[in-house]
Length: 375
Image (cartoon, rainbow, N blue to C red):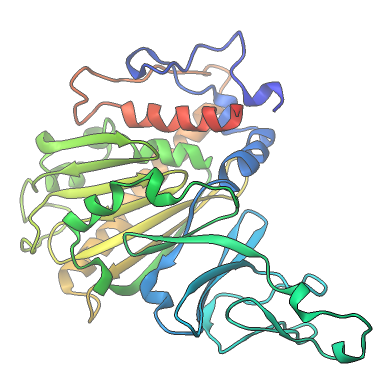
């Protein structure tokens, strides 16, 4: 890695002790060279969420995903197995599938090469007249695939450690709050575009130091005295044991089967998972770099059929119309400040009690970024 991807002698230290640490320098949030290094060191070596298993329930069902410039497809085979492949034809490189759907085979739209749901090449037009052509030599290139807490993940690194080994407690935590996760179905997607670096967005999610000044409806909904953030390996959890009220300014609800105030999880490197009190539902917010100072967010909602109850609709509207716009403004203002000649590094606000306003999870994330870039 070149020097810009490391802390230099002039930088204040991002120490392993969050209570004594400074933040990442501002250049880590602006420079194209940093994003290029992150692409290889982080995104091509980490687990990337592609869908809930409900979208891949039937044989032939498929979804596609893009990880920077790499296209991937995930498909349920006719034998019931879940497989992932690079989404590229082995003939001349055309993309095979777009979006999501269901198909008995994978047919390239360019020259009509046909692959089975197991990735094996079944037909190549005129190949019988090509000397020495071996169908078995041109199967699709596999990608590691795994499920966790009802969600499907892929990893471009063939030597990657299994997700369950890196985030072993995550599934149990989510299922304790959302026990009906496997029965849920896709409800809707909301997409947001931010003029901010992806790490600015993750930093913002990982602390509630800003909640009281910036999210009055959220702190009206959640009992902040029971709100705690705990870091665990490659993920962290933010859970409030109880709601402050069922008739908050955010939305009203009746207590659900699991009585809690709020739950949020961050899974390295760019996925957040949300659960709100009331009727069972879960949302994922994937934070996708789209340039050094631009991010795309996809928020997908899942709930029990029929989707969605009036209370869940209220929660969705609160997220889309209130909480997300508040956070987008915060992140975009921070990104502007990161360009200022009057700012380079800050100091984490981490208290001994790791209280509801402590920033230790932000430190945990930024250390993971730095460690990945320095490997």
